[in-house]
Length: 271
Length: 271
Image 1 (cartoon, rainbow over the protein chains, first blue to last red):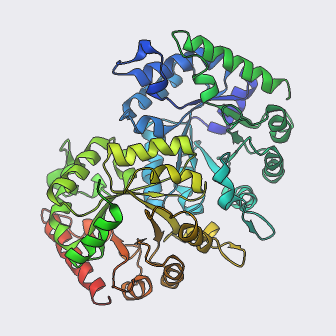
Image 2: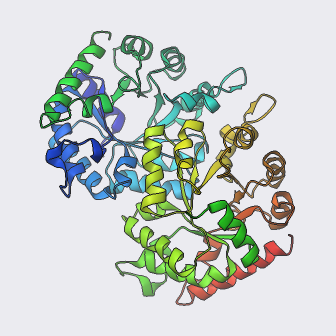
Image 3: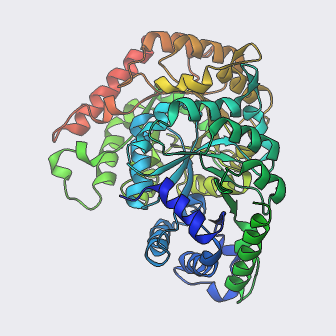
């Protein structure tokens, strides 16, 4: 049984990279050579994965982009490809699921048995019993939304409760009560570096998945300073569109590799 | 272009039923005659739908139960079957999605274009810009989690902010700021009838999807009294397991029909 947290720590050390490459495939943005191929989504993502793997410590496919195109089978193949060809680089299925226990069991089966993901993102709005079924899958990672990178994230997450904003309460619950099995991580957007710092203070060494440094404009230096742990790791810093669509033509994979390398280096400059 | 809210109001009047039959198919609970069939999930649900349609005003398939078994195609066929054979009974895809705008666009496409659902459930934790892309699909319904029926629902939803619990703030946001297009509904669990009453007071005539009266044990009389609108409708009262698993043998569809009829009548006794 693989252990997500251990695999992730090993990957951070071995690859000397905190970069998580986000896989949000949109066929309308693919280079012309892929147009019309039956497995274009798989082919595009596989080329991105193979080209960027030397500069990444994890991959994060976003399931909506596959589901909107009836491409669940291509997502299965893609994750199997990562495991077969890039062992030791964990795959986080970005699904942001959240439902009552009996339904959460089904979602956990989807993520961990069907897709063989190493970790999955989940939503905390329905509370701990909506998160617990994922933790029954020994060694798998469960990454809970805490402070998201979108503007609307403040609508609820910034509401004050008990003298502090809701997202800090979620971080505290995750740290104090929900993480007995040591499988949790948190999502904290790079658009709010000061908030990353507060969350890091609450959760100790817990891994933070940090979207928002690419197309969403987050500041790399501020993010790394705010989120790193004592050994200079602790973060899955995600970039999706800025890497996978760095090039638009036949050279898209090389362009993605270059963007991944540069992003890794920008992150490492501040570790 | 069908309009969910209008279709729902028409269905409540025409069928004289507030019952929403939840479709949570678990192959391990199917009668023996279905075992081993390639399309067992579709076959089971289709029989349930055809048997219970005379007593229901809507159907709610829960996508996790299909996704865990690679049965997305069966879900597509099932929703197409409802539209073809039971026109005027809206289908709510229970998916509880929640993500940033660009990803929400993909989930909206999944729900409304791929599955042809009339409405979808969504999670409010990421705020209004995570809900807005669904509203771009004219006439479709968007049902936002407010107060959920599980025990852990209180972990966040009952936190006090601005002098009242978070779920009431969500109801107020939905009523005052998120519903300009008139497409919204809210999920409020039947396990908390007093809270249904408070939410009804905040949101006026907005439809409430109310799970929890069946296997989860909510009180029908208290639920109906708390949630009805002036004309005795306004609620999609959902029962899943107590109806679809009412029988275990060959007669499962008749048993489901009987359970659906009795549930409709119990509800109507208090309208």
